[in-house]
Image 1: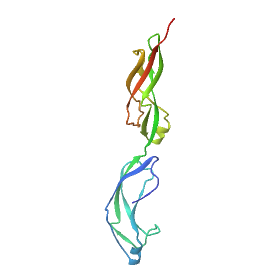
Image 2: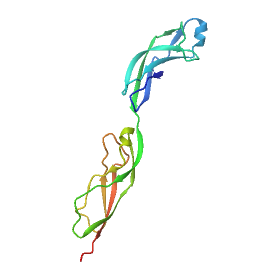
Image 3: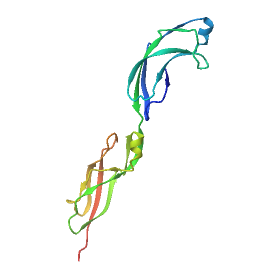
Image 4: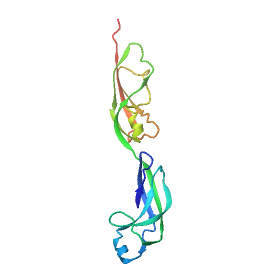
Length: 179
């Protein structure tokens, strides 16, 4: 199989199948002797999904050019190819979001997440627009002095995956000395 043309951006060829997988060539013996391979040329231009097409089988010589006066039996093959979106990975920091207010007389002294960064997988264009991944909001209203830990889901945009979907958010709260 020989692919020509460019598929849609961010697409790569996956599993392919060609039927038949055996052919017979005939012609003048001097021409047959120069055939190095027989290919099915498949145009990938503007393709982005799985496809099946019948394509002519072409005998090629050592220079990659078609060898003349060769009969290929069968003349055509059926090619099936799976195309996949190319994916990229990035390790981005987790940004914990908060809502609400602490009780009067308390203040937040620190917020951390475990893990601090997560690996994300998506098409390159989507990852290029991201510089962090947010958590679902954590309410500050019920927090008390000391370390407050919550398990919180990540807000993953459509098309973005991560092996980590829940992180621990630790919010340190202290009581303020009031006059």
